[in-house]
Image (tube, rainbow, N blue to C red; front, side, top):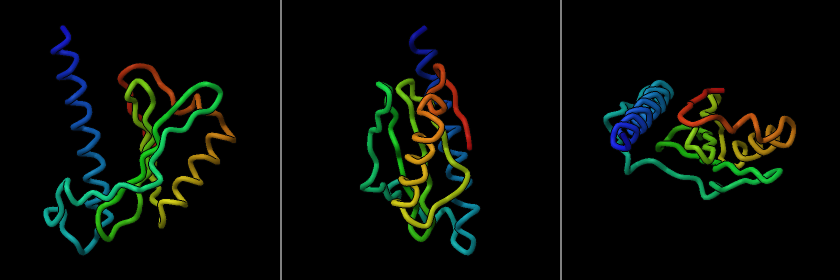
Length: 119
């Protein structure tokens, strides 16, 4: 049973990564996605664990070369919220998500087990 759950989780992660990859590919315009692979992914130095009201999420900001920053928030269950808007800088992305958490609460980024959402 544990193996099936792990396979399902890996499949869902693959689907999420495929969605992110397609989104990056659309934004690249004149560049071709095959020019890049996973090792080209640039993680922001601003990635962090953020805690509010005793609840925590991981803020992940990343991009491929010559693209805008993508913002993702992952909760303790592994649920992922990927923002549809992209950001010119990683600092802009971090400010945006912290403002949203402060305004609307961290609970909006915490789901049940095995859910993925886009904003």
